[in-house]
Length: 99
Length: 476
Image (cartoon, rainbow over all chains, first blue to last red; front, side, top):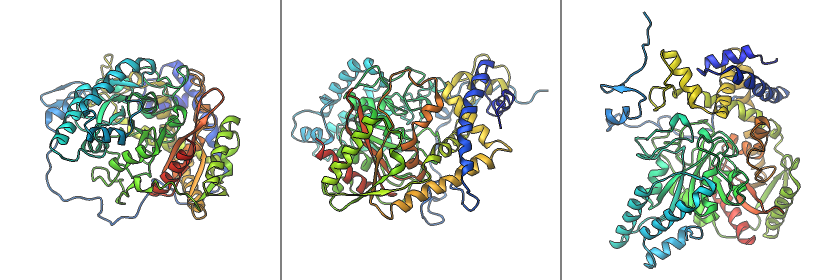
């Protein structure tokens, strides 16, 4: 199935990327090329295989849990220090709900 | 001389009072200042932190205390690994001004061991690339041949060790980003077993494939650094509970009787001089008493497709956090919330990063998830099983790292697919999560380094190091 510029535009919207028309054209070519290589996977019969989401090792059920004890968190100042825009200890963003 | 020190020569010199850690640090910083412009391997030096660490080592020595296994050793840290108070940019405009409020666990451990962080190493943006040409702050040049790439994505980390502006360094590897630059620059680079080293503080690219690992000029130094940073960390739920052996003890020099597998699928399409160096290395191992066994890893041809679906899918999720809110950058042109997201990301990310986010978003989107992402995960099972079956017959596997040595800057930037296809030998080990490393095995007639890859079973870094070290001794 050939990838169209419309497909790429739709994906750009999902990915929150304001691609320029030139980028859309280039992306359509590049992604199209990668996707045709990827089609190779259809040569394999994987109907009886489990998906491997990650490399897993044996451990007890609660091994990665810790005691429910309060720890010193980042201070508010540290937490907003890298904010693009902040104020009053909060991250500030443009209006979320339009009236 | 920073370019000729080893971890143990520094330690010996400190204990014998031939020099102080502060002297080593000053010498290293001065050398880095004068040499770095040639390669652009460091993005920034950290003199205050380096001198503070060096003075702490000297203070311990003065008290007669053990200054730690990395005492006084100048270390470079890839700029995708967070260092508290030191700008960590991931070589991206998006994080150009980001100053982390915490240290990565690997950073904490190396400093507790007496390591001296000299600076942050350049890399491909968000660790995405195989040439270090995707940095927002200029490419890195290979110190061995300045018109060529150092490899990527940990090009800067490999280059500082090769150039001698660090003794060891930390890099990260998702699909080969430690092994390939190690091979291009003629140094040793190690990708440990997945989960061996905590990923806490490693800016996430592909969470099921990311690793932190060491670069050094010898197997011994790489093994020492790995021993310091490895081990369970409760801050990383995927970090393994398996105990960390004494890796130095595995460097016995004796590999007699070890069965080494040669995967036949890895020897097609190799540039001839690369192939010659690898075959010569195999001969050396044979003479050292190894039994060379022909093995098959039949799902190798599917590894690139599998990797580029899984890694980009995970990357699209991990990079969704860069939205103009918490991580410094926000587009000045954004008026609405939606524009803030879309313009910040458009302006902040480079082409390669955008390409991977787009591919990852596509393969996870409704209607394509089963055909691509789920399918790739099932193929990953097959690739992992190839290795498990091979390791029933052999103790270690030996292979090339890259089909060719360092190419010229600019040569491959316009052909992303060809760049992806060149990851073929390193991607398989990452998908299976096994430990793998690159050691130098000679140069081509143009003087370009070639790396030999050694792979072992999960958590069997000891066997991998034993083979690598024996080979290194025999080839010097």
